[in-house]
Length: 449
Ligand SMILES: Nc1nc2c(ncn2[C@@H]2O[C@H](COP(=O)(O)OP(=O)(O)OP(=O)(O)O)[C@@H](O)[C@H]2O)c(=O)[nH]1
Ligand SMILES: [Mg+2]
Image (cartoon, rainbow, N blue to C red; front, side, top):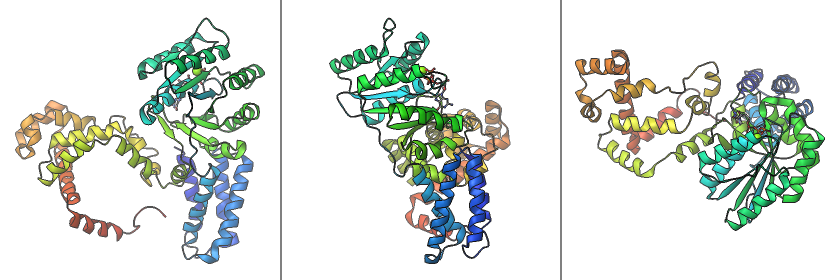
């Protein structure tokens, strides 16, 4: 996500390396590069200019007060300004009501129908809601079917009426249906058009007026850069939406839309879509996005994803086994499967500070653990629970069985041994403290500011 921008901003800060203090000249030079990076990322011209101006003022103003290096100071100020630019604090979705009504708007193909499904899924599983999806695209019967397919897949009811050609009537009937069947959130998917035109605007405005939604969301494809910002403005002028959903952030979008939309329409980004699957939805946090843009990774999101997949009962059992030094290949396999559930490996590694850039041109297979799993699956139950059994001939059999080589089998056994050692250390507080101390003394130290 945004690797190019991150790369260029980091390069801009290099100008300051070796300089002992901030001066008008080195700040101006650095910020010129930052501005160029923003423009290359397709950030709105005016926004980029105001951004660097405000960083400059703060940097020169704060100079005397601090003893940290100019590079660090400027990074810190840029970080604060980026957070501000993207809306400051996170903006919450309003979905309470009897029922809460969420209306989707946006151009054709922006991802409204997909996001409707994702949001329904999110509200059901994360917020304990009973959502009803409503198909109000009256032009394309296929669009109604598309929503039904998603609904079936998620176990969420979809309200539609292919005979009715007035979207307002469908939506009103849907709300009645929701009221009498105790649905507490209604998500209304609408039709989009290729470009902003009067007909689409009239229609979405009429739906909004009739339904008086708790939340109107504008869904926009982040790959469309500046166009995204212009479309946002056109929609906002007409329907005064409450929040933005940026989709397709998993593609090679340059980031311009994420950075300029808030400044241009003064409406917060509430969610981002990061894939076609129904769980590829993230709440938008300006702070974390700024971390990512400045190459600091997004450790908080990483930990959250880990927690979501975390099974306390299983963890307790594992802890016991580690203490007794009984951690075996079955547990190792179980751990791998947990990691896989957290999502795409490259995506996860990208959240580790500094890794996003390092991985830019590295191709990580979706199933990076395929060989490891094959090897473990080729072991007998006895071998899995007692790795000490693995002698030369057994290793050979496993390599053949898994379609790998003895070297790969040896490598995995080595990794397993290392993991086991590491876990023993982590189970022991004193050892852990010793390790932390060593890490602190490493050159470069801990990542962060
Ligand atoms: N990679 C990726 N693809 C997405 C994302 N969101 C939607 N898509 C894809 O974009 C395409 C269009 O999505 P739809 O949800 O059908 O878009 P729409 O706004 O409902 O389109 P219309 O109903 O024609 O106006 C589909 O192929 C989706 O799978 C996303 O976050 N990432
Ligand atoms: Mg659609």
